[in-house]
Length: 70
Image (tube, rainbow, N blue to C red; front, side):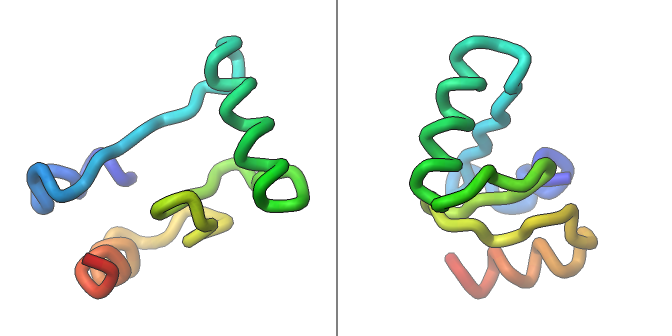
């Protein structure tokens, strides 16, 4: 979802996909969950380390959120 809208935001948007089946991703997931104080939902979208969406939003909702955030 995020990768689909990334071209519209150019260099202002950096996407980091966490693959929990890989060690690096599993460790990052643990860090995020610890900071959140509970297991991070899967799927989820974090913006600047804060949980923005705990489920996949519509394209329009995500674009509006990012436009307002940026």
